Image 1 (cartoon, each protein chain N blue to C red):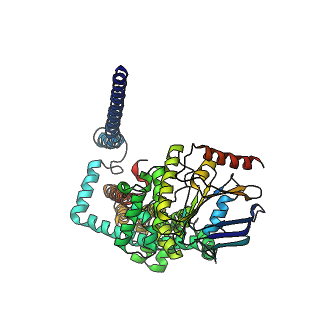
Image 2 (image 1 turned 60 degrees about the horizontal axis):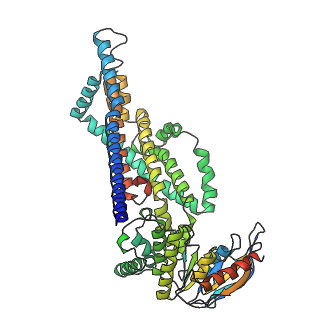
Length: 290
Length: 244
């Protein structure tokens, strides 16, 4: 009886200990979250404060450089508001995003199809891969002036350019993903009577989808990156055009404003893509904190 | 379904003789283990029966028909589970019926039945990464069975599990086998696992891979791992292994 009581109390003390440990862990986690929430925005806040302080000091106390060269953050915000009110902001965003999405779409379709084809067919790989390897090291920007001569300064040249630049990361990720498919999954499907077509549709495509998604994200980032350059050279609209056009008027606040809008758009789209990725690939332990 | 392995030799391009003139006959509905050390070619033989690996010489027939490649009638359970990570447990089990054109309602019912058979009806909606090793292997067995193969091939299916889970899985497998009455070919390197499960144990040896001896296990079922008869057979097999 005494023994029974003792072991019962030992048990409850173990349970109590477990509870204490769990609640400590939860408290540590909460504290870490709090520390992160406070410390992470610090550098960004410091950056804007420093920017404001330096420009205000330069403009009002002691001039160290021509105030036109570095506007205050307030002037940049004013420039954004001005662009928004005139309707330029909306038009520029639409123009740039149209080119990015169209180019990206072509790159995605062609990149994934070529990646799968190269992985599946030795003949295709022998024919196409050397060609791709020849062109890959040439920065895509090198082709931009030629593309403008070939396709004019309309939308086509920019869409082709974006598609070309975004094609490579999508292609590479697809080929890599196809190579990494676990062969035992294919055997498992075969031993259930799967045909080649079944294996492609129901094993290889889902198995390669995380790699394709990383490739698409990378390709999208590339599209975003190159569209600005394309709009410097040959465009009459778009955020890149806005930057290069403002340069001729020495309108630095607008140049910074356009760059900031590009950054914000890129960030938001990446957040959306990551959320989509987590949703579509929720079976992947990578997205579940393991 | 009967399986006839007749004078099968497998020589890899490296010159390594994986199997030399192996003969095994497996009767319908029996539980046969391929037992042996690593390198004896037991997994190679299983993969040849499955149709994944070509033979160099000899003949493998299932019900009198030559094995020409993998087929749904020879279902395989792998040591590494080989579950499709993008499908939930129930969708994994329904995979075979789905690609073989079984209708939505019917395959759902089928998958539920086999998940229940392995005791995982409450985990149907979980993805493989959310399951323990033992649970994954149960799903994998259910998936193979739901496709209604006539032969179940098992390649060291419990090799990655801890000893306790392993014994539970052995008991469950025998219960399922008693219900399903399928021919089972089971690869293992554990003598006691082979003796506990099998009607016949094919003992293999390495360098070159070959059949050393075939033991008929006459112990009544259910078997007691600690009985004298069990120990005697284990001893026989061990003696035969050490003899070499």
